[in-house]
Length: 328
Image (cartoon, rainbow, N blue to C red; front, side, top):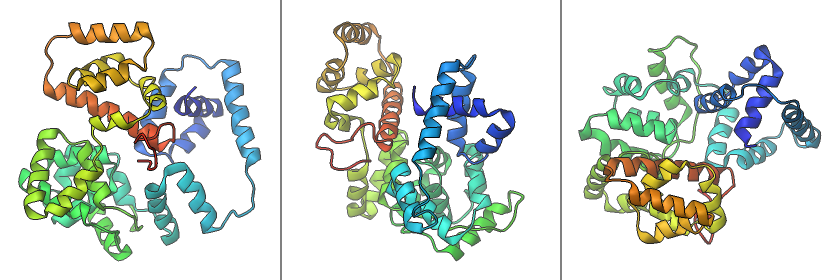
């Protein structure tokens, strides 16, 4: 049973009132993921519910009050759960003691709505907003922005090194013009070359190449730095067999067929040899019998697999890079 289903079972066991209060503290994607899992559960088996509740109880009993309340303790917990980058961003907000109502509400909006809200703002403001959102959400917003400013936005994100609280408060006031709420603020670690690379990973290749070409013309060194940090489908060749097997458990056959349809033979072999003989034969037959497919379909499938790979890497399930010294 994966973590999402456990969370869904746990919330359903709590009852509607308590579950709704807990979900108020989740991110939009977490609400969507857990909500989807809850909708798939027709009825809760007694054994499953007991297992989840016992696991929660064990986890609670393992906790200790030693060190709680110290910022170092919070740092360790957040880093272990979320990774360095996300943990630092949340830690900044905790230390500065605020919640940014305007920017947080953006996470729930459609990309077209966000683009319409910010398209007339200065590119630096747009860059900060996109750096604040999740990479795939930012990529959708970027695709809605005028082509002439896309590369400028990515360059500003790549060269962004944190935001001063006063500047972020001003940005929040701009966003709050579109929402009802109190004047609150937080500082967040947004931007940087990695943030720019993460966003471009989710952008269509036609848009991505145009942005990278424009950045290269302006700053070739920055373009190379961004390119080095971008994770492409071919990089899965460096994932060990155990990681590929974990990835295969999370990806549907239809998506896998499309993704491998446009791959090199070495990549196809890597996935096939990590399947059972029968499953490998069926997958190979599916690829052979599948007619011509659009390049855009292949790219979409590959990006979906990459997104799963990144999630598994964040959870510590797989290691991106065969030698495995760095987690992404």
